[in-house]
Every structure is written in structure tokens, then in C-alpha cells.
Amino acid sequence: MSGNVDPSRTDFHALQTLVTVHRHNSIRAAADALGLSQSSVSYTIDRLRESFGDPLFVRLGRNIEPTDRCNAVVKGAEALLRDFEALTISDSFDPSTATDRLVFSCNFYERATFLPAIMRHINAEAPNVRLTVVQANSDGHRQLEDGMCDVVVAPMLSHPSGFHFRRLITERYACFVSRNSPFATHGITLDDYARARHVVVRPSIGWRPGFTEVLERLGVPLEASLELPSFADIDRIIADTNLVLTATDGVARIFPDLAVIPAPFHREFPVEMSWAGRTHNTPAHRWFRDLIARIAADLKPGLQQ
Image 1: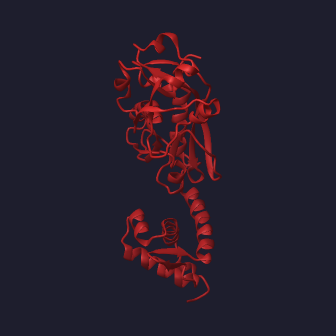
Image 2: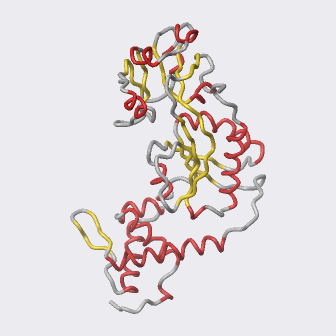
């Protein structure tokens, strides 16, 4: 192997391939992500090994692991690719003629709150823009990091470096009950809440609602009489029962047939938008983020405060 890098044998395609293999720690997964054959990816990595005079990846059981030299090369390659992408991006963007594909990551509440308005605007302003919606759960930043989505809208548990953030709305938790429930008329006290029969939505195993930490501080247990994986049909499930659902007050916009009353505790529910630095100045992405921000600004409170 030569220790001197031959620039004529190292192009942006090869660097992108290296970065993708490094991200997935797998030739097969990288080939799938790039839409290439495994043999093509392997050939490119072999060329780079020759150019950099380093194996770049070593076998570890069934997996491959990058060498220290590979980690250093990938760090520089990512910076080069970002700079090159910035050079190729036009500053102008005309939504009426755009054909971009955008990937929007969110959960049920954000999807129900934002997506109808997003699609109305796209239909009217950018009819050839394609939108894919994926489930965020708690993996939004990983999705951004892996290039699986362009924008995440969700409650953010952390603000890791390398990402941009914008708060869209700040709501608070409320209780949702059948309109026939006594709570709908008289409200619910903390003692009532402790004795009530609750329905809890857990979209994934181990997921805990954000308000449970407040209840723990107050010494109020939350024992679910019914657990559901999503909010689907929850209005029909609660109707004509004494079940209590605790959710952000904006859910009132989604299920208007349920009675919404203030929760007997205070806990804010901030919803933020996050995106990766690599798309910060991309015109189509800026347009999409501005659209989401405009929709958020027009939202009416779910519960008059």
C-alpha cells in the first residue's frame, strides 16, 4: 500500500461511500443505503485503502470496525462533502416548480396537528413537492444524523450539538373525559385524579408520559386501567366511560367530542422543530421549516387559559 494519497483516485463519490460504510459499520447496509451493489462498494473501499495506505476497516466477528486512520479520514470527508453540497445549492427556490422530496419525522400529536395544514399548503403552493412522513418515537435526532429525515417536530428531551432547534408551541397537560362524566362538569381535583381510572398511551415499550415525573413529586400514583399503543379511536373508547386521558391540551383540536378540563397539576408541553446543520441553508428545507413555523403560529390554544 502506498502512504501517499493520489487525489486523482479519490472523488466525492468514493468519499460518500466511505462515510456511509463508516456510519453503518457494514458493506451490505451501506450498499442498500446508497442503492449500489456490495461489490461496487467493496471495490471503492479497496481503492481508498490503496490511496490512504491503510486498511480503513478491520473485521471484528461478523462486523467491521474503522481504524483510527479511517475515523480521521471520515471526519475530514464529512466536512468536504458539506462544503461541496453548499457550493451546489442554489440560493433561489420556487415552490411552484420544485420537485424536492422532503422527509418529516413526528409522532401522532404533531402529525395530526401539523400535517393537514402542511398538505393544504403543499397542494396550493408546491404541487410537485413530495412528502414522506416517518414515526419519530424518541429517535428523531438519530434519524437526522443518519439522513433518514429532514425535519423533526416533537417534544425534545435534549438539545445535542450539531442540530438546530426552534420552539413552535408551548402547551400544557389537560385531562380528557367523556362529556357525560361528572368531571366534565365539576372538574377534577388531585384526590379525584389519584382515584380515577386512567387510559395511558404508550407508543413504545418503556415509554413514560412526560407528566409522570410531576405526579411522582406530588406522591400521586398513575395506574392505568387501559394502556393503548396510539391515540387512534381514543375518543370513541373514552365515550360513555369514566376513563381519564391525560394529554397535551392541543389534543382538543383533534378530538373535539371529548370534554377537556385543566389537569390538577401544572406541566408544560413544548413542541420544537429540529434539523441538521447540513440542511440549514438548503432553500427547499428553509421553505419547509418556515411553512411549519407559520402553521404553528396560527394554531389556536386547545384549552383556553
